[in-house]
Length: 306
Image 1: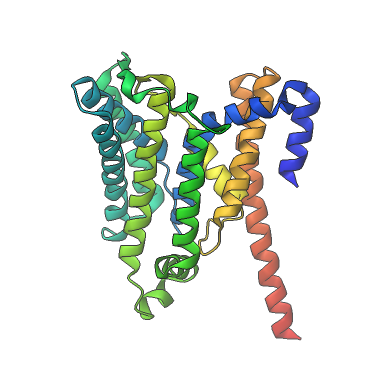
Image 2 (image 1 turned 90 degrees about the vertical axis):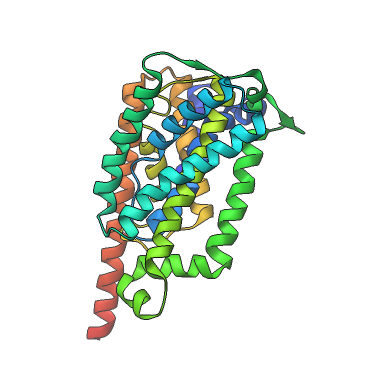
């Protein structure tokens, strides 16, 4: 419903929004948000949160841009980005799963650490990316931009992993009741670790798409984008308490965030106001989630009493 309302408002504000070719082109601008949101869905379903994927993206982008500028081939650069992003995500996973530290505090720290590392690596300068790595956003498969194809393929893979495998069932179990999952022989620590690692790997893949589009690496890439990512996952129906969320819901919510961002951009709404709107959506999603959970609890209580 929110997606339809947002689309209608954006179309009325600027008729260019109804241009199908334009809408397809703009999907490349939101591919990184979609990929990180898919990984974040796993983390939030497991009952945790990660504030660092955008900082992971920035640090990974700076590292692989340096490697590519030093002569690393395009294929190895892409592989390196996924591996490095995964390793940075694994640091979060290890601290949360095996160090038993709160995910909020761990990832708040690595948000600053990874962003600071990117700034220390490149300083205020931009690192030029070789031509072999650029232009993915201009590549079309039929009429569909290549980054959108990547997002759809990853969404299918994550959907199958989450809804059709034992790992997915374990992830839901850990998020719903960690103690019960542990007593049911679910490898709780391993599930948490791999959720963070997969999110990190998708942040690395996002770094490749961003580098391909912008053609340079900077420490401030994707600054504040974690807000869009978390907002999309919560708007998609996931619960901060864990145990609930779907890939379809996340993808629809990413589309909503993209429509809001694109519509406000066409209306020349300042960036600060755009952030305020996204923040309001995040607060609304959190309140709605909490309200629904309370309503469900009250309903169960009423049934028990009756």
